[in-house]
Length: 190
Image (cartoon, rainbow, N blue to C red; front, side):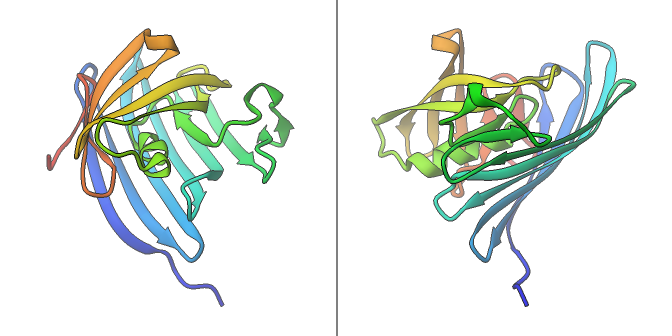
């Protein structure tokens, strides 16, 4: 009989640039971590409602994830997986373009920034490059996205992706969950 996951923290974010919210639970599992979330927002006039999960091992390496719901009239049902050799599948189909990536990044959620923040465990002043398996939104295609996380203070990170084309300051809580993501998301209790 397996032990039930233990709730570590819940966060409710408000989107700042378009109408939207997201709620996420961080859970400790018997052998790792789990994120469970639900996002509702507007994108290009469409209503978006997505439920998502990410399962990680104890070192915060992504094992699997799901995304279900809808974007406008389009139904979404995705299952991602990473094996021990860092090979990825999307709905059971190999995705060699993202092989070697350890983290998943859901392009519609600030929650997945937690994964490299915790996995890298950088000291203040240190920077770490990441090649992430990025689930681009709203296309929902899986592709490599190069990112850099620089810890600028105890709970502040400079985030850059796409060779610096996108930059944001990430404020985080004691668990590493984002409390403010630049001008895009803010935690309701921050």
